[in-house]
Image (cartoon, rainbow, N blue to C red; front, side, top):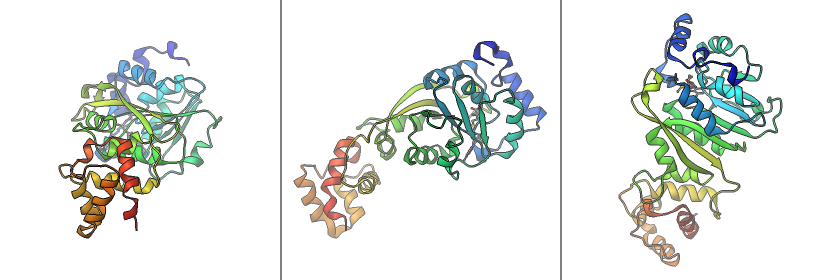
Length: 297
Ligand code: SAM
């Protein structure tokens, strides 16, 4: 069935149909799984448009719920593979999405699955893969980092999360929201907030507003560093105490005895010891990490 054949009212994502599905299946929301289901046609159309899908793109969805977003994805993408942790949702999805033959449902925790093995099950595993999801809020960051750091070359992420987390990921230096999460993501991806989603379009309504974040994978990481693990270690150490200077945070990491060596490295690299991590751009952090390499014992 194509998108134009479906009327708004026959979709899963409207309040009456959603309530009917939940009642018929005697479904109980599980707070521990971060379950807030979308019920707004306009928001779902906007999410799908932001993802720029076509029949030459495969989609991975995390947490299909009762299939509200999945239905829109199935109508635009070649295939959709959805990972759902809650086994009580499986018979519901079998019913709500029964008419689609391009749907692969996997009943598992996304953090525990062998992604490469699952992706090989797409009919055409060579198509670019986009991740499109309304993420469970309680584990947004672990899921994102798990997927971004996996060896799978996802082309793009269009994902819903708490607005505050989306702002932190997309933040620029010298802002309150900028921190280790901004750098960890922007090192691999270009990130921008696409639009804001009010809490009123979910059942049940969450306590916070949400945002759709669009992230596009860079061809190669934003900066070249001598040692990637070391770069992330220095970056995290820099942000441990946001109000402290770089010198203080590096001393906390390497011990008081390392003070003169840290100062020497910073001076040589022309980095002020009194600057704070939040003032450093990602290339400046890369420069800092390389400069501190002598401390790597
Ligand atoms: N996509 C649906 C929608 O937009 O209406 C539901 C989104 S709801 C915010 C999050 C979904 O993720 C729930 O269905 C929940 O059961 C599922 N979920 C939570 N933790 C998960 C995990 N670790 N792995 C896979 N799915 C998970």
